[in-house]
Length: 154
Image (cartoon, rainbow, N blue to C red; front, side):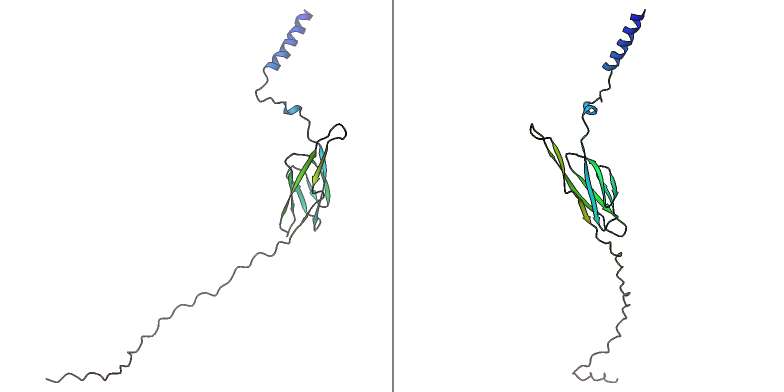
């Protein structure tokens, strides 16, 4: 009886493997990319820095980001300053028999200079247009000729 139970359990576990969903991917077994430390700074200090791959902090600071092949951006924001976005390249140097693989960030440290957001533009005030006044009727122009004689009386 014990053998029947063991065979039934083993068969059920194997049957589960054959019914894996079609969305099953081997990506789950790929190693995660190594994390790389990135120094973030801004002028003036105290800006909120957020990377496009997730982590962020208040400058000056350091964050660990995954070494993605495509690179990423860092966006700096601060009240009363215009936001700045800085592109960052990730450089992967493959290893060989003599040296291990390495990953570097360019630029590192990532620094942005924030420009003050000026006051909002003031609306241009123009005086209201003056109403046009009708021109006075022109007097008949003086003729260089004498006036015609009056008609004869009848």
